[in-house]
Length: 230
Image (cartoon, rainbow, N blue to C red):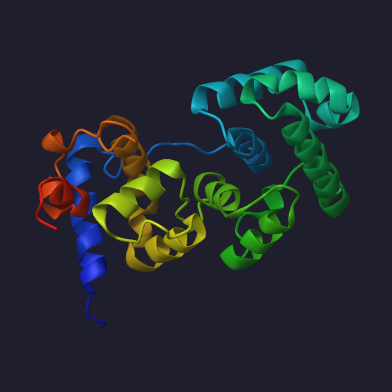
């Protein structure tokens, strides 16, 4: 058996420490949608906005159109108006309609359920081929809706990983994702992902991080830096 690397042990220690605060590994959140296409559209709406605005836009869209077929038929102006709370409405509505058109063409219906259970890399390749779908969006759909191995990296996770010292501050999200997927045990992906986001929101905040109360302070490079130890 391969000996765990220092980075592997460091990340595992960090995850175990923050699990004592948020408990998402012990109580895995159910974030899946019955139709993975819903999760995909929701994640597209989440780009460059907060969860509150994302959810409001998604609820408006689903409230106005009971099926994706209806949304596709409604046209650009109507979909743009529905998703306006998420910001960048012209771009996001265009991407949503493009995605719906491609999915209908590829599967004959507005559903990507048939992707579930297929090889993870094949599913990811398909998702990344869709208009406006990047690494984070594809990883979210894989992890939450397809129950596949993926570790999405948003701004909170990137910030925490950079501050603690797992990666350099210039490391792009795609590379952080690859490192986490390599160094973290797959069974920890979902709970660990949500825990880091919670930690980034409540403790390791972008402004005024609460380092003095952080359960992982003693293994954090940023805490050492603030205290003149590096």
